[in-house]
Length: 322
Image (cartoon, rainbow, N blue to C red; front, side, top):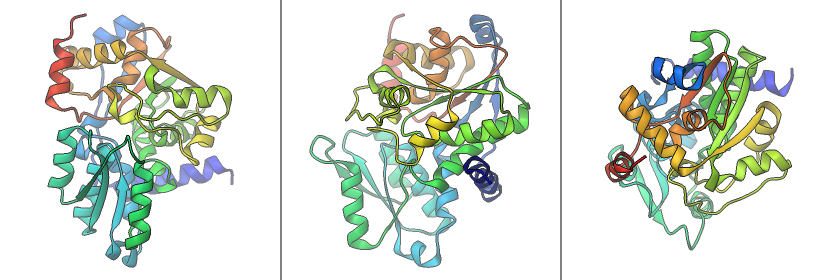
């Protein structure tokens, strides 16, 4: 069995664990956007997933596999928001105490939601230390199990179920556009896509200001960017992970970047024309299409990865002139 076949089996197993726990999110279309880009687009709306983002998939899949002892000791993670909320909610569902290391500049809505789900939030200053170091120190000191936001096989398999659902519903796609931060969603989606529709072209999209994955993909050497100043806060991870980087190199066909203006325009389009609330990180695929960074053909899937955006950011985006 190849690595890809083994990973796809893990995605299929994750789907079974998620049944009855995760939402099967809708796929939406828009005649207007099809006309604008010259292709048939299918949007996988992970903003309708529990906690408002795809992260619930990976969090539930990984945490549901912990032993009784691990569950009793508690779980720790680090996140700018969506993974934090996902781990917190899964902790509540599975009766696991959760501890979340979160930057002090994280969106207020994400912090509040994380605390509302019952997690202990541990704030840190990203200018002085790294979230990985803070979480690792606490895990070692207290015996917590680390559930990282993307660089974990069970997390990656869980995220891959979003694309799996698309192909089960739609059959083949000619192209799939996936936002990229740490690469968990991208690598999981690519594994599912290549197994379900081998000729589908997988393209990862990230902001120009946070182009570490694109540079890593192009040079085959891991690049890092510390605290990139992009509006797409879900992509501010410094780099791909030790697991996701080789998976992206193996299964992803191309990486592209989009400008901040293009991201903003995509969020506005989704809000005004499709009546969808999508956070900037979630709109990267559409941004690449509307800005003609990616030239589509045939049937194109676009994963809208989440909808957790605070009111101040959304107001600023909607008030921005074209």
